[in-house]
Length: 363
Ligand code: TRP
Image (cartoon, rainbow, N blue to C red; front, side, top):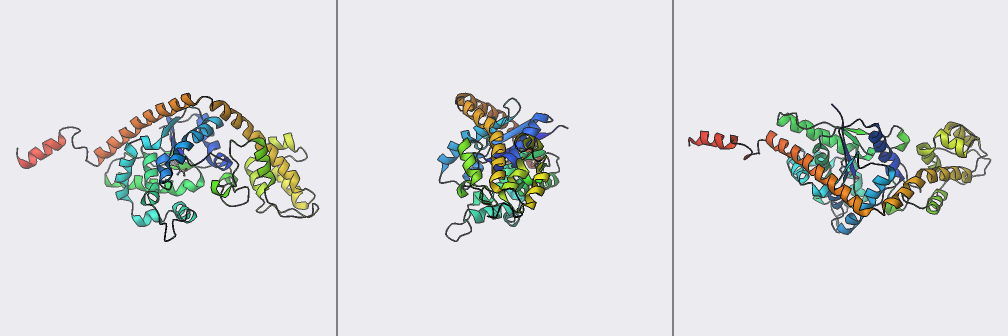
């Protein structure tokens, strides 16, 4: 069997380098390896609405931003099917049936959902958690299973959703005695330091609301300013440096390949050598920030330039989305049909319901 790859993002803002190292690079690698039958990338607008019901315009506006980011990093519409979640009618239907396979208690144990509830202030008495928001892991299971995906390249924060999906798949296949749904696994970055890139301010999460992101589309001066603003402990240059919790080194772990040392910092062969020297003292934080800035500039320049070119081709991109969505509608409808057949709720598909009832009532 070949692979079916499925993933997506909520269109709540432009994508940043946390997305890039946390999952986008991995998606590109999978695309370029080419070892799959389908590769679906979903813009999860319906999921984004679960905590933005009052601001649908924001979601609408960010669909193209996310799409431009996808194409700018090199996801190829000839190899990947792009689709918009809310346009796939099979998904809410699958979600409704899956909701019967998950307890409320299990749903609310989801660690990512729990921390999001805190972050968004849904745990305050006056606010509360929208039911649709609490339910999004189940709707995400619908996204994944609708394509029978076995591989989900996503950030480590998505693992609880993938685990929930596996549980639903097992439960479904057990109850309905059909091997219709496929178990999936997360594809994480190979380098663990890429799992969760901290914000430029050292906050554990890179997030728009904290203003600590470097966006894929940021201009060179903006990137430079953000790198320079990274807080490092003040010290005399000759004092030993501290690497533990040092934001600049956290970023270097994610980005500084040996090639970048050859190009911008030939005094050292690789990050290990730089770290040893830094620990001894004598290397200023301005120097390592300059190195990091050079690297991020190199990484983002082609993406930013491609993005600018792509933004002149909006009708073509809308068309890519439209065609991809149509294909995704077909694929997901087919799975829904199989699911309903397995559940024996496909009453009028053939004459079996009719014949059963005729027999029962002796017509
Ligand atoms: N939960 C993902 C996010 O927060 C978006 C998403 C929706 C997704 N459906 C998915 C990711 C299916 C992977 C697979 O951005």
